[in-house]
Length: 122
Image 1 (cartoon, helix red, strand yellow):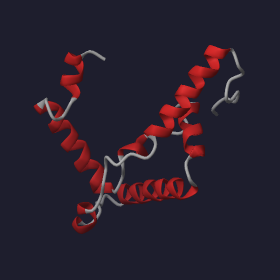
Image 2: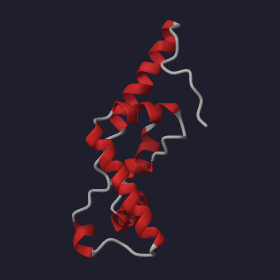
Image 3: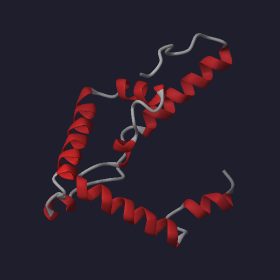
């Protein structure tokens, strides 16, 4: 990515990017979610594979956060202020594994090997 585009999306350099990041952070804190929770496992097979490779505790915590967020949304409520204060919406857990899965997929394609998975999403 060019340095100009990088400076446009960097919250440290661009005021609008910082405002957007703060707005997203506030919305995620209200429901107790992390940014990586927003990745849909049915969007691509890479995300599903990355989730399968994560430790069971991490996936269970993700599912619990998603269930809590859906419950709060249905009730038209937010987390209490004291719980919102301890939320860490931008602590990632999925992007590193997703990058590894995508690198392996590209390497397999370059070597002419069979794909990592040959199933389709419902």
